[in-house]
Length: 376
Image (cartoon, rainbow, N blue to C red):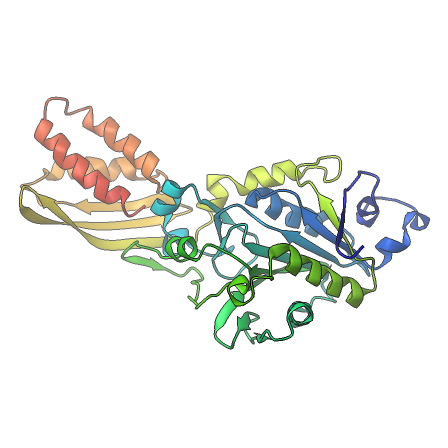
């Protein structure tokens, strides 16, 4: 059956692709030319861990792998990007949209169940992004010949010459490589645009910045182009191209018997140190406007952030509003702390306890801290 889903057992052919010492006679014909996999998980960290695991453990010589995966709402930034520059972290926290940093370069993308992620694993020698994109275009045209989809020099896929339906990123290792790309099928456009709009002002950084694009869902163009239809079409094209069986093998990314050590990879991808701490050094130089009892005040703010932690902090409020000595205490208490709202709230609360009776100071402080949290 075309695009049939077959469950994965530990003794499956996938084991035979790994760098385990298994006699060559153990290979079935179906694994000679490679494999098509699909994750049963919608967790971004688990799915990114599969990429890491395959990249680290599988011998891809003559056996390429295509991996399909979809995630519940999340924003995924490139390896060398700054999340404060790329997305609206406050909104994402409120909406429960996860943030992930992948190990490949490139720009920021929004994922939800209406977006298909495809990862093409090959040896370093066989790595060819344009080849993979052309394969996707052939698959799309096989289902809907009327579609005008083209691959660009930037390795994006454009619909009707202007709408981006796919963006590319890649990682090239010593002997293996992977190219992954998105495919917009029926993504929530409102969530996509609001999550990828950074409200933060005054950021100075050398991090890789994303280039905004007009996007469109394939489903808007043709309601028959569902995720399932598209995945089956791409799988069929991939199978024909590599002369392998057209089977989509379902995998569970938490299965330690199939992927020894994978859960620790997923855990690492969820840590604050990886997601935020790997941000290239940056600074914030801005002025915050505060309204207090009908008067407008300006708070000057200069912060240097390295490895996600505050290295230099200079918050200047008008002296008549908050005494300089208190601002100095705040500045010094922030040094070395994570640039994150929960940590700064905790530190400011500790500092406020040293002024228990001063209610006016507490209310000014609340306004100031709310403003500072707003830039995090």
